[in-house]
Image 1 (tube, rainbow, N blue to C red):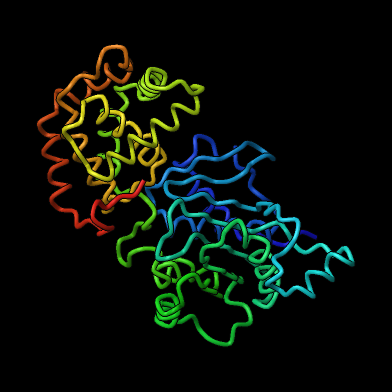
Image 2 (cartoon, helix red, strand yellow; image 1 turned 180 degrees about the vertical axis):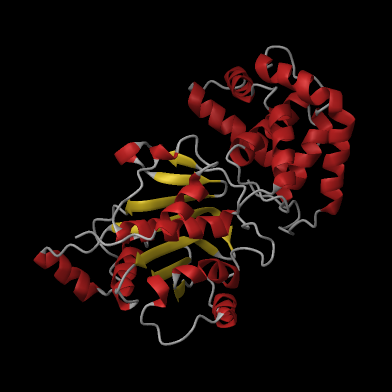
Length: 373
């Protein structure tokens, strides 16, 4: 006899998905209580990290679904971690040897693994195991240990290792946000942070662990409305220039190497030289190429953090290039037309907006030039 699934769980899941997907039918919703609870925990986790404005993209389709992509992170829901063996360090070499000797297969299908594009609060991601009904926190521990050991080589950075049990299960103490905050901030660099909470405490725990700013209502991973606006301005401006065609032409003209190798050498040399000196008196086409590279690598997804030095460079490159036409032969007609129609008539206001954002930002200090390539 199937276990009863609370209707509010399904409503919350569908409510979060609506508006973030073109069709929620692309994500097969489970029917069993345990599976629905796991997805509910994933939805609450991603909502706490990303906030209400984050759009999601599914990686794969149907049964081949590989993950859920949001700005700044990818969530592998019910993912196969793929490790054929555990690390010898944990649960220990004798145990690993015995597992292999006797052919014992440990659990390998993760409830959720969130990988951050860049570390947040010192963490590379979140590994979560959820248990519903009468299951206990102890039931999460051996699975989380096995998963973490198997993922050690793939994810060497610190993770939040999280066991969630419906209603708080058999936990003898109430969740203490301050103690969690102390554990997160006082841990040694590179150490994981273990959490054990109910599904109702997910958002509070995310804040306590330092993964989002308290009281903001939006996740620290996502772009806010002004971030989105600024990103769209740079995308329209940078993609007027066909950086791929320009790189191919420059590399072919200056090298006898095979084309792909020559392009890589020339690109790396140009970018390293630019970021080491930040010389904005370089030829316009080189500034446009650096701007194009930033758009393709950091703004497209999007995962540029607007208080980092790269954001400062992007703002300066926009101000240096927005009044100039791309050189002949390297113009993207569609983007040029869009730029002239939608953005150029408002250019003075856009420039003022970018200058204000720059003036209001307290940039991270990352060395003399701020950026290493």
